Image (cartoon, rainbow, N blue to C red; front, side):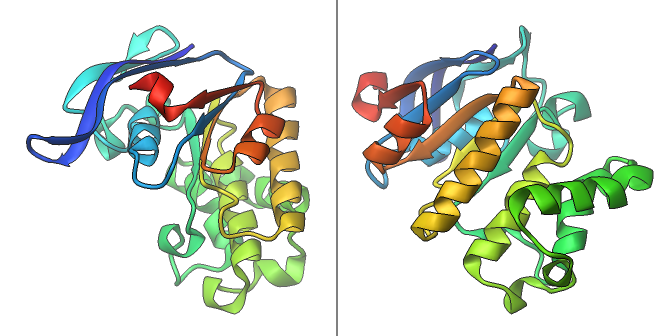
Length: 217
């Protein structure tokens, strides 16, 4: 179980953008978090994935409270999450080829021996050809780069996926393809999914439970 308990968070002292919010997500469950731009849902998603320290409240992962944030989190907690952001160009190192981008988490955690095979497996799953894998971010479309970012998020077989406006910049066909990849992974691995967005139709079709942001406040 992933539990967010009475989370208050923000970026400036005394000015929270999330105030006293609680949320639970079970293994294998797909939960949508629906709300307008600027309401704080992305901040909550970052707290859930241990990427932003809350002002108060706590995150509990599989019964154990979070013991750190970002790189100070223990590896076993940090790698339990796979995250895909809205803007792939802001989350991808422009110096890396797509192949190296996907393999980055494996190499960073000392799993170099399995990096090549796992990268090829994931590239096939997200629809990237070998030719595309040799390109750098500026040489591919937003949709192709987001496919690589999703593959990177799945590289370490996370137990929890956080998709923060993952499809907001994509066309309908790419959106459908990436949602299908996430759903296949979720079903096969029993991973929990928190999908953040403002597209009501998409979230209600994608997720078994959709929470409207006012209901959390």
